[in-house]
Length: 185
Image 1: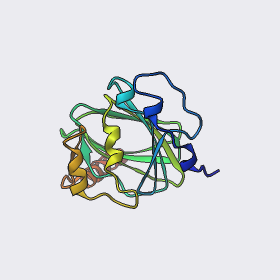
Image 2: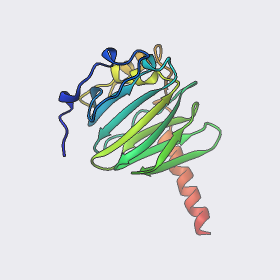
Image 3: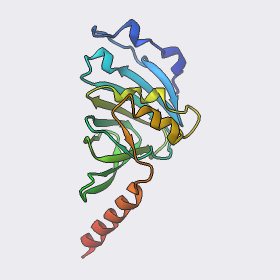
Image 4: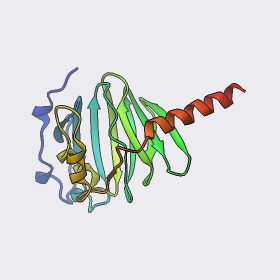
């Protein structure tokens, strides 16, 4: 069933800001992002900066630009479809993993990472702690990839450092190939 996201648009300013609230199914602050939607369920300003929660939905898409956070940890729980993550701790540990419906993934702070929906009709809940990075939705191009210039603007206001020149995908592929070769021995 397709949901009319526009009809569920709710201003969290009317509900949150440190007060308790309940959102109905499909409600939240919706914004387009590439091939899908991002729905803010709670923001830093609603939780005394403790955390933010975003519902992301979409079809298969290109990965996000590699980036890391100095203070922020991201966690995700996949509700449907598949989310592919690439992770690099910058000390030699590199991982590529498909996270399926019902599975949970942790993206620690200071790890360079990217993610993409790897199946149609994918959906994930993302928890961001401490809150603040959810404001990335203010910088995303709703109709396609966002330029590095636009993303760089976000570095001054939210805890993110974009690393488009970092060979995350190649390094993760090499690490996976090495693990596969060792497993065949």
